Image (cartoon, rainbow, N blue to C red):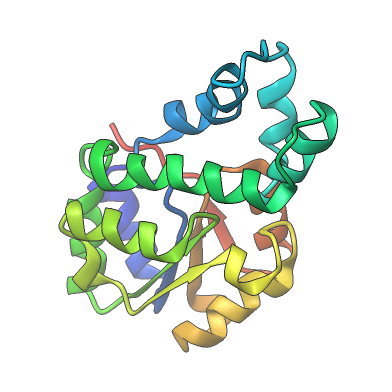
Length: 199
């Protein structure tokens, strides 16, 4: 994302930014893309080619229920969910890093007076650990996990809840997202939505 893009956003009197984490700020999609397959393969089950395409449309809890049902796993869906969360938590705390330029862009927004919220499908504590590890935790006014809301990101009410927490005007708040279903949910609120690409 370029400095020119940042300037354009500031000229619209931007007050707030709602940021996604995975694939937007954090270079973690490769880990997510293997999460379901690795979980199955650890149990001796060969993951089908269409698995990730299906899981990409779901929040983690729904994905756990899907794995339980489709592959007749002996664990209940809650157990599958918590085991998947433990796997991805290790990614946030040990492995994944911000995309180059992401931290500097957040810092420029913060310094310009833009209030930042993180809205993630990840577990809240894992997301906080990732922000802290990447030097960005202090920049965010609030961190919201979709799993804590019992609403996924396809639901515009979820984004409106985050907006209320952030306390900025809808017409002056930008959502930064990369997931198709989440972009659709955010757009239904009337907020501007940008799919950033850091290089």
